[in-house]
Image 1 (cartoon, rainbow, N blue to C red):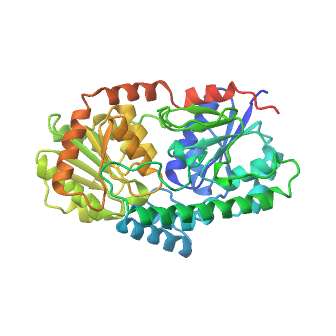
Image 2 (tube, helix red, strand yellow; image 1 turned 30 degrees about the horizontal axis):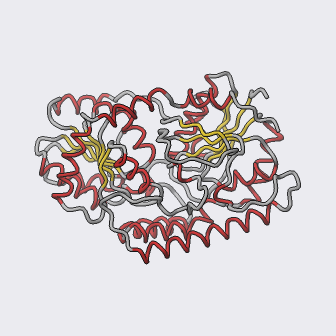
Image 3 (cartoon, rainbow, N blue to C red; image 1 turned 120 degrees about the vertical axis):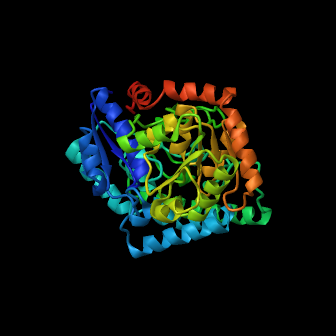
Length: 441
């Protein structure tokens, strides 16, 4: 089966769309006409890269760069506020809120999505779809209509559940986390209930489409029958039963970026000998300014000469007033451009930050708050490429030890080994693998 045109769907979140555009650009480099299907807010980004773009709504929620400044419906704004408040109470409380909101977040307007996919198929006639795993309505639509597609999983591979794994419940926890067994059992029970609700809704809709493969046992485990693409290193720890889809680990999905003049001058003025530490918590979690402040204070206490650059979202002005020399607090930092010049990164365990740090061989201290971040932090510990701490409760001396340990990891084999694997792969590697598969029935 020849692939001449592909449509890639993405939820309207900046980190997801950015990676989708890079993957679409790799298809284009291989001579495939590629369309990005997402919120209208991202049209310009796609068109600037020479890609096709179609409006495709998969969520009422959105995040175009800084979550707090993105215009959203009042109900979605309240849910974001509830989520951020839950992160202050702890990991189980956060995951419980995410489980509660999962159906609205990940199965948005399934009937409308099926109609939209059908219309786009008739209009564009793509040979292949690439469906973001976080948009289950897209997967459901492609499944019901019997269209060939690849599943794109940008978070941790555990997001694609198999066997006894429960979606939304970490497979393991970082060493420094203390988890209450009763709370964990409640989370597992709530997540199972969401799984049942999802599956019932899937099967209710699937029953209307005789061309679909039929009812499913667990809607949260549904992927393309042909291939699943992960934006993650191949740690070989998650396997699927024989006969399942091919797994492609591309390792990273971004392009290198050059520093602009002001940041280049900043690094040159700061000197090359002083430690350069980057603190980033992503577009949502940058709202946790009190955690950013504690990280800044710890870094300046133990490394007074360090240059600390912090992405602080709406709190940049307040953090910038902290009495620390060599502190740069900005609303949004050019993270990928800064990474080659950074000695250590403190981040939240997002898959993009994780893969960027590996790509550039930067040791990391990870403060996971939610979602798949606990699994990513545990992987970093297991493979000696990072250190994890609980963001709400770490003590100053614990951060000092974490910083010391992370700096030592720069000399270890883990960062070099996995960094080499990540650099050898990427979006072009992934596209070539995907184009080699046979998607015919």
